[in-house]
Image 1: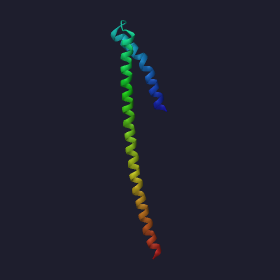
Image 2: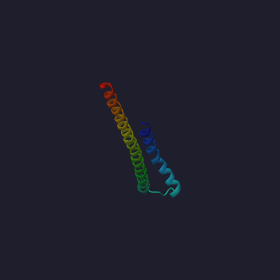
Image 3: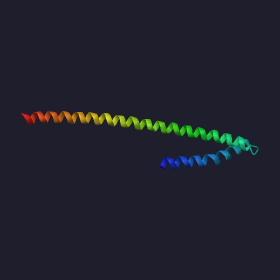
Image 4: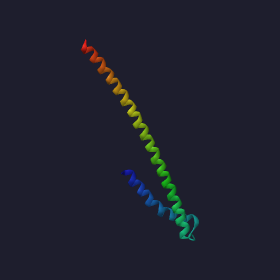
Length: 92
């Protein structure tokens, strides 16, 4: 939830910030369609970076889940081996 709030805050801040930045760089003669095109392009770039970041984090989490599953399977194999050996001893 914290990341969603931070993302929304960044998106809401970038629009007015871009207007001010391009007003300073280009000057007061900047037409609204140009300003909106620049802002849209920047927002699309930010969104693409956010999607890439989320995909990277998801990949890390997937790798961690796979590692935990392998470790769990190994532990279950060891427990089963111990149970079988203890059953053999108890039957003697």
